[in-house]
Image (cartoon, rainbow, N blue to C red):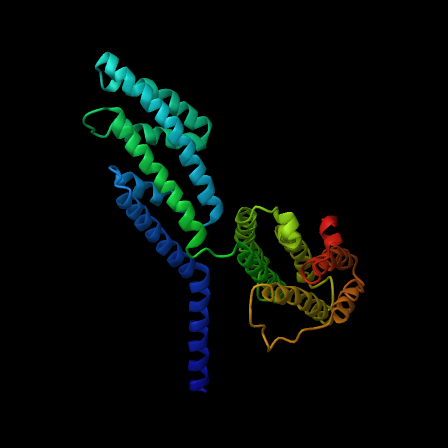
Length: 355
């Protein structure tokens, strides 16, 4: 008996570690390595082209390199726009300094409107940074030469970060989106199970539902990244992928509605509740399995792949309830489940257009 308990605890610890590794540690490690490669690449390019302001190429690479492609592109855009505006403002400040022979007055005259623009448009925040880099840091000789060198280094850092982000440890956004969808569907099945447990309060059921919201946000982020991975519109390349966030939000709302109806012990008998849970959990897990098959090269041989006829048969039985509140919740859930099955399992374009 003790051996069995030790084996169970060991497997539980390994499983918990693997889950934490895939969800937290692995993405953090991948981003850390990519960040170091981006900084090292910017340093190498600066050495090859003999840039005089290598430091700013490294700093820019550190700023622009983000965890996902969307943030990288947006940060690079903001950096480029801010650099151009900051270069223009720095030229004015340097010119005023040469005319007035004053250091701080031109700086404040130029910084005030830049600060106002940055407060209105956040994408212009790097203009103030560029002004400080170009104008305040010490320089010798021609005042415009350091400005050109520093602006060149900043642009090198932006370009290197974009290239590294696309080529080094770039996780397929499509793979991530279907992985997130599979995780959400399995959590919805677990949520129904907890709703049927008499010892679990509705407060804890709501907490588990709230835990699905960050996953849906990550799913939306992955879909946005997928739109930037190719030049062809995602709606044409993979229409199913575009609809995943909307499908998951609908299923989450439907699951909470059904869970609330099933958690009321006066609404249905125990046998009916168990039957409904099995039918709904079965359908959710079939869709989760279908999402897995889109990015896993080796299918799960221990999973019994059920035929569509069996799935639809189970769904048709969900509305056969005596209680009106349960029947109403099931009718809504059944409609969304059938549409989700057509989209996720069968790639039905007509169902995609119905959303």
